[in-house]
Image (cartoon, rainbow, N blue to C red; front, top):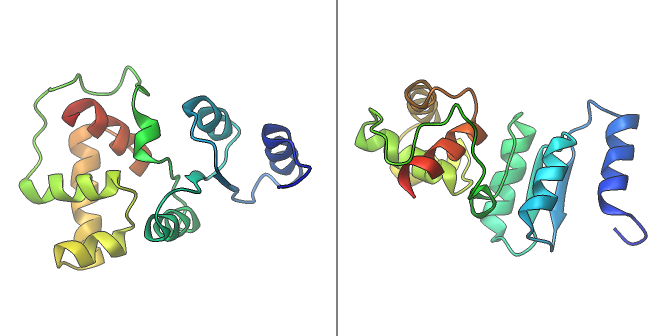
Length: 150
């Protein structure tokens, strides 16, 4: 935003209206900036260079209560709870497909369309993926997938 000062503006908005979901759409691609914004509680960080379909999916995810982080910014973000690189995780082929599409930032609806299943089926697969990876949300699942499959 012209005249705005990035992190300071987001911090001010979060302090004034903490329940308001805030999404940042930026030309910047630095992981440090994305991490700082996420630490402030934004619902997502969307690079302007992303395809319109990805942007729409990211916004839908955030409106549904999720957090969006572009997969390319997840590289190098790890936590102790994540499985080790290459560790065997019991996922079916379909669950791996769902996880792959999730990591691309696709919404449940887009994943369902691409796989030819219902959104309810996608939700069931996601719950199984979350259990197998021992995570609680979409972002943590993508982080775990980055550690396992990259």
